[in-house]
Length: 88
Image (cartoon, rainbow, N blue to C red; front, side):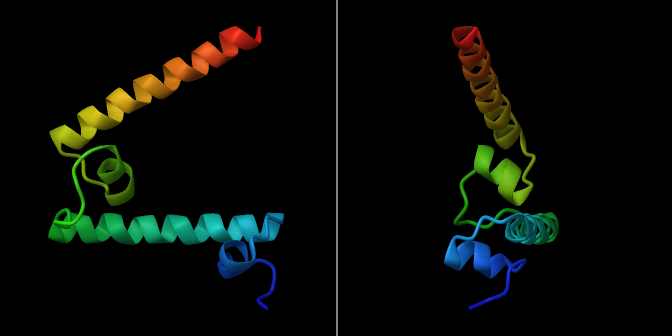
């Protein structure tokens, strides 16, 4: 068993204590930063399609990825506003 505060405890043992959540968040940010750095040098891998996931996960900011991220953001914000209106 791994100790609390390790990202593998969050992932493998499904622990959601504050220390494990913080370790997981740090791990995810490091992985994303590594992907963004790789993409900046090598471009988007051929196995990854352009669109919103490539924008956020790989740091691809081409016109296609930006447009898709903007469109999906509009949809998310509209859903959020609708939920707020329904709740009040």
